[in-house]
Length: 188
Image (cartoon, rainbow, N blue to C red; front, top):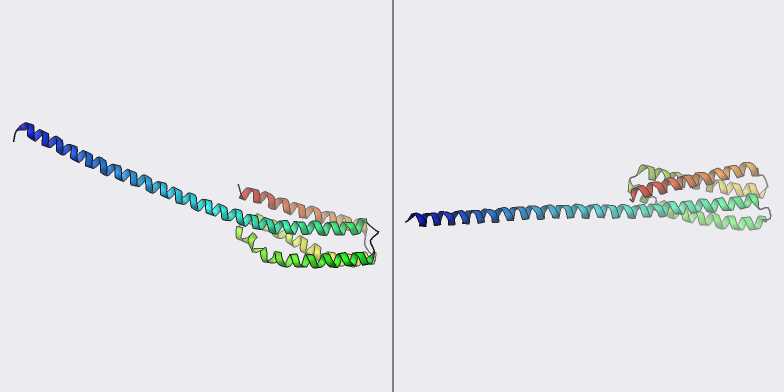
């Protein structure tokens, strides 16, 4: 074998080794890159699913709190009407309050089933504001039942009841606002 043939064989061998090494490194880098992209896609998908679940739970908790807040508004409006309007007859009030009491009781029973939605989020500030609002509404509802009896016998101190009712309204609004702020923070 001549020197030229040996040089050609060595050059060919180097080319084969270099191209094989290049192909192997290219395959390795491409596989590594695809694996990394796949890992990122899976992480993104898990994050988006978790975010969607959180948004759904927050929406359900919002429904729970909104219903309690609406109950607070209804109680406030009815009690305020009783305090400020003296032209109601006892039979009108009894009819309206009995209807209202049964409506609130049925809503409360439904809302007790929904309370787990608030716990499912796992945010203590959100839970606290939601349950403080529900406790406030439930205690005011229990008070309302005695309130109508006092109204019938005209034993109400309108100034004291008005101040108590205003405090109830402000507390309900504050708990609702805390919930709304926390909800906005969670769903960003």
